[in-house]
Length: 177
Ligand SMILES: [Zn+2]
Image (cartoon, rainbow, N blue to C red):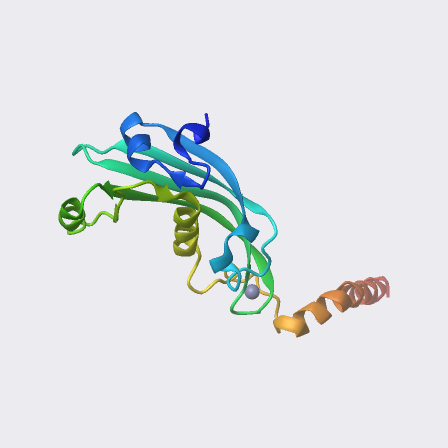
């Protein structure tokens, strides 16, 4: 269930304290092209991600948000320099301090804390979360990179089917003899 209209203002500010106290969630979809700070990090900004912002009170009675991003982004593999699809499913909990005093005390623990005395910019929160969720050195899983990498790999990809077909034919001929 989306309660977007109840908690997100026309200017995109999310009423985080209210969301947490009510234990409600806001769900939606955001286009990758709208994340300007990610422009140079993505191989392509086509596509979109699903998000959920869930509000709750933690076991110590502190308002907390759980931010979740799901979907895939196209990154450039640092090993072979080819683009690949990176699956994302990240979840982060953020405590919502209402005052500087709360921020100072809560921030001393291991929990991530933001000062949320006023509604927070939803898009900026999602962009921060995505920046943290991206791998520092994006790479294909081990053993998946094309040998040679980069331009050489794409040239090889085009010729390989014919090369292996030729090998196969030679083998079959060899077996028959
Ligand atoms: Zn690779």
